[in-house]
Length: 330
Image 1 (cartoon, rainbow, N blue to C red):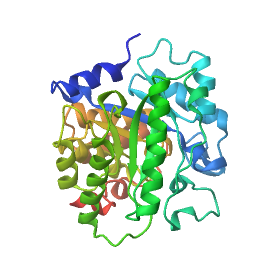
Image 2: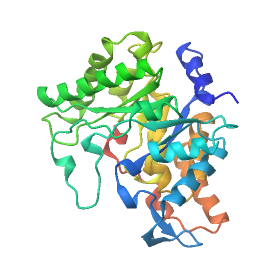
Image 3: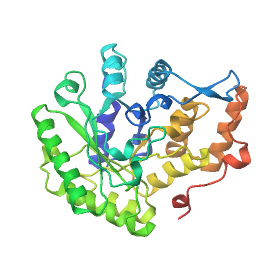
Image 4: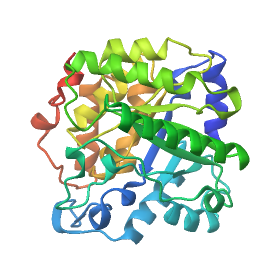
């Protein structure tokens, strides 16, 4: 079966994009960051959050269910989970492209009682390309810049080494660039300019066959998104990451604003995984993008469908309609 990612990327590159071509990835790679709590809390039969956590098999089952929904284009996984599901032929008769997280820089180390995000990020890579390339052909590589020459040089060197390997194995990748986890002395509006410039600097020296298929970055406001998305649209497709769970309105507002200002990909992890009904949430995300559904109306519809399924929402409607992320208020 033809993969929707390839079809949509081709349309985007040729400037034939329509809202139905928006790419959505379910980022189920958090086991490389969070450990045992990754699958999220268990819920009772009414959807109420319990104090216990789901197991890895629950996480895998959620990946299979989401892939069968025909709502997403990419399933991003750790190498261990990806190897298992791919070899079980989960994606053989599916339009969904499996992808593997190929590195795990220290700023995604979110283990309980850890404190790794309080310092400059360091590059690190668990997954091996010679192993992953035997069952997958797409991976995520991540970098974070922190305005420090030694730390940033280490990130760029690690990315260069990865690209050399990727070329040898004919392995495609997309590039994730996080905002720095520490205060680097920039105002919020300046941070978007800094990250954008770091991205362009990082890829300008790459030839066509080693460039990332698209980007995964934080949404740093309308101007930063528009600046980057309009810089070289024929060669650079911009996508956004989801970040923390937030409200349901935050989720819909983020994908709506990012799309409005030029993003063509959304890669959401916790926003999807920690929702009351992940498949329903992605369905509403699609409606916001493809049917121009207003974000507040999408929240109301989401709550109505939860009610019909007799599921208790995590927040009352009034609170879930609130925009809590300051960047979304710009």
